[in-house]
Image: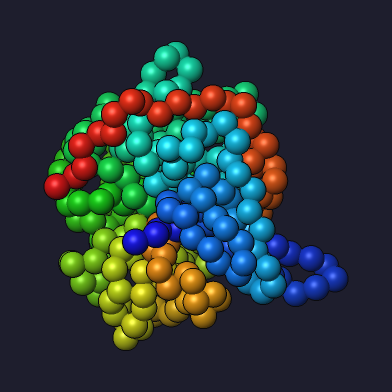
Length: 273
């Protein structure tokens, strides 16, 4: 299955109504709307018309992104699909969060130091209004003082973890895994995508779709229908959704990472059972 790293932004103009913009990265080669996409591409989707893709320069062809977030200051946060070497040298693993700035790559969250087992991977990444990280994992995991399932989100405040979203309490079947998330603090809304098709809150969806939860009312709705945008997206799985309202300039994002020389380790870490 080809999966997409997925981003939502909102572009505002005084002369035109708001236009939803999606930015995503496939973890396998796919052709959509006549554009050939690779795992290193940032794909700009205005919601109508042709797609455009910009390679993320500096990342080897064998690397990719497991989770992705656009920070409000222009930095990029991401989780690597496989280990990459950072300045130091040190390595960022699948349970780590990396920050890309104009000066280079730095480790934003050292998952192992925070208590995330090495067999567990972060597969969804978002932020609160005050900058805390929101994380979901690819399997149920016991963190320091907290047990979470893969349909949950936890908050990392720089010192410890705290519960943020209990998926099963909000009607998410335990068989589903949250693999994309963003949080809109103004509207108190979560946007989520899952690893497989399912039904939540009476809404049927596929893994290329995006659901929205109004946390105040508990009402779910369909925010993005991937296959309706392009039939080729029916083969994809959305895996990340940056914070709504953050404008992500695709070309600038590519330039931000250009020349950073991230290098993939020779061997892939063992897959999570």
